Length: 117
Image 1 (spheres, helix red, strand yellow):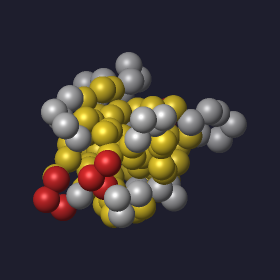
Image 2: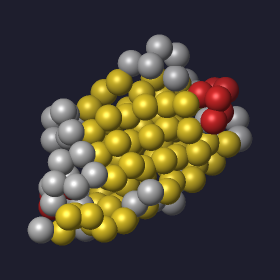
Image 3: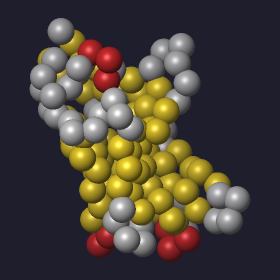
């Protein structure tokens, strides 16, 4: 599965951004799509995910109530609407696609989000 993110950038504290991720390839096998982020010197962490079967969502405690993940099946695209951004949200954000019985997780190349105070 190939993933292409867009929508990152520089925003002030309290601002909003919307990330997009277009999936291509063997997308019929994908069970879950999501967004991870990785700040410098930190481990990559799961921020939000959405099931391709029933639309069930998951959010990490750090973004719950501020971020919203959504999916447009017709466009093979997922979105991450980020509101009330904080400096600690600064990171590279990676789109993910989970598929197969193991499962396998594919990542995109990432898009940088920088929140300035």
